[in-house]
Image 1 (cartoon, rainbow, N blue to C red):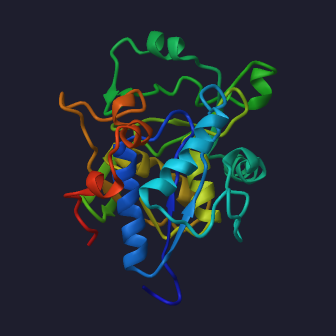
Image 2: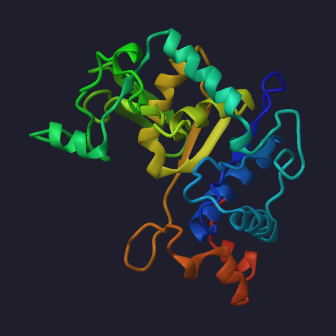
Image 3: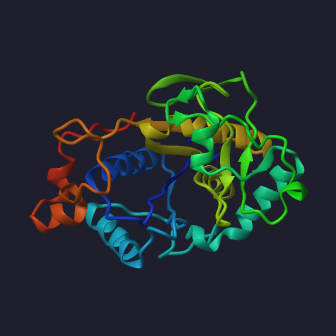
Length: 281
């Protein structure tokens, strides 16, 4: 660990369902990497999804994490220098980042619905996550769309290669406009999208390494553009393999049988569940 830049990692679950074994394995890697570097581990409650958020999931999240053996130095239940640790209480931080992007002309208002986007793309340009936004609203100004419901999209630099070194998977490269298009940073319902909230919080909380699942590799390319636009130094990244079920499908919160809550009820112990997991490098 560099004393001038002490390691700060984080756990960032969303209370939209019960945590499953896949979450636990990724979070365990995050905790072990923090411990191995003599660093600090932070818990952040990513509770911005009002449609799926339930307070019972927050309570279960804290209980299940502690049962499994997680311990954090800062978080919604223990406080810390970077409070609040519930994203729903950090709107001022996100609005500040949005204003900065707007001032820098990095974003534009978009009135397109998913149906509009599908209809506009006669020959769909498919990236890793489906249809790439065709740029329909790129020339929009807020004054021109009046009171129409709109989101805010980040204008990606078409053709630019976004490269980074991942601590687990090695060198990564994505091309803006080919692998991903202009992406939403502020939703039409007035809530920051994941990409913006994640960047703003990780920067504000001094996170030095983000440990998360491999399904977010492409998100890292998007977020690196946001870090640059906001004049922020990005953290290091370490993406973990995803845990899959017997059918080869990656675990999701619909896999109740593999939730920590169900596994615990069936008598499983954290040590048994962790058996065979690799230690961090």
